[in-house]
Image (tube, rainbow, N blue to C red):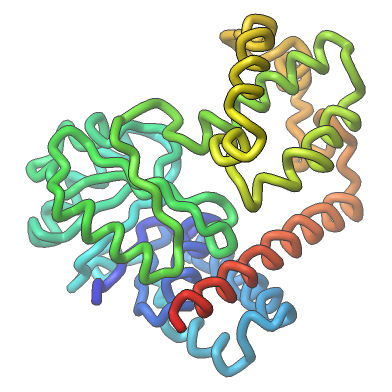
Length: 316
């Protein structure tokens, strides 16, 4: 069993730790200062409470999970005896490279170093490392304790054993890892997500429909199918001849914008950044924000329960 260390105690860091501890792993988590660790403790306690309320586990199990997560502001203590490290620090390239250099002075060369980056290529991340064969990307999706997908991306020098160990660890955490065969910007999930977002922006900017109806077109149609069938399986079920014909006449008319759309750019310039600023495409009053965030969390928990039930059935 791997001994896991996580560098970064923010939303992603402590959520990944929760996923690991839930499946029985001991986890050490590094935070840059006591304030970060206090926030991580609060975030972890809140997530455990919601998961207990939804009967994912009871109070005894929650206490055990919490006791398997160890926070510290001393990096050397966090990585001591670790066999697998997940880096979950801010998306600043030079900061990540500096961390990897430091880690290589603290841990043996057989310790895997995995980045939770959502965009940087692993070959770029590892270019200044003494042992680049030990580095790869394991991109968890937020909220990491509820969303099963993890994108695994190897670099040009990543060792096959590093990939195998990563896939095994993630599966032991009840995640659904997918392996990218090529280093491509945005990996798979973000490329698909932003293709949809680009078209949504283009429709809004063109005045084709209101923001509410554009969102509804997703949540009440393809959004209902996607939890069961992805785009390629959906095409198989609908008939590839039909999907090919529609592709042939529709693709030429889809947005190929190379930058953010007019509305999005204006909102950013006006510092209207969405939920965190109180206004974006929508108005975000505190009560409404809490309601929508809770509703989304409940939906993710619903699907997580189904995943767990399916896993139990497969094990029988």
